[in-house]
Image (cartoon, rainbow, N blue to C red; front, side, top):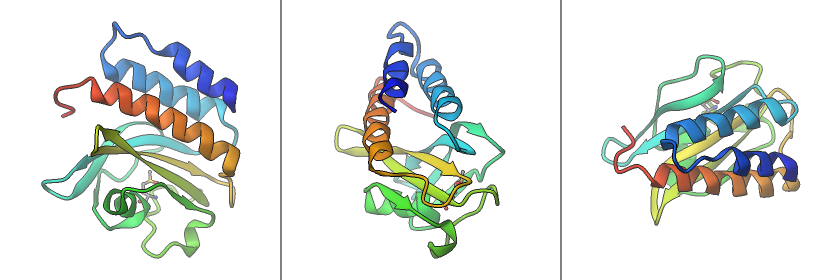
Length: 154
Ligand code: SME
């Protein structure tokens, strides 16, 4: 997994807009980490209390998730990483792709403000282990740095 994080670091070109760098990071995660079926961002809108779909790799996904709903909305509300070993055991899980069986969602920050969420789905039960978490947290930090460069995300 460390080599995947290194690829994400290496693809960042500071002369490019954040969207170019983040799009490539998401492509690296989706294609290099085994057994994933969706990798993408939701942006957090604290005024409307809604998370809405950002750049991603995978099938068409839900566009708006209210704070407190699903894994993404719960992460936005609690502002803490959530790992779901079996999505069928998570009350209110939103199934964008019925192939998904486990999921990890990590908050993205600009300073102390929540600005988005990195959402990753797997068709395998209990796919995300401690080693994955560590690398995905470092990668989420890279994405946060890129998003933080923007004066306005949408
Ligand atoms: N499963 C998420 C919805 C987003 S999709 O996984 C892309 C949830 O329960 O919030």
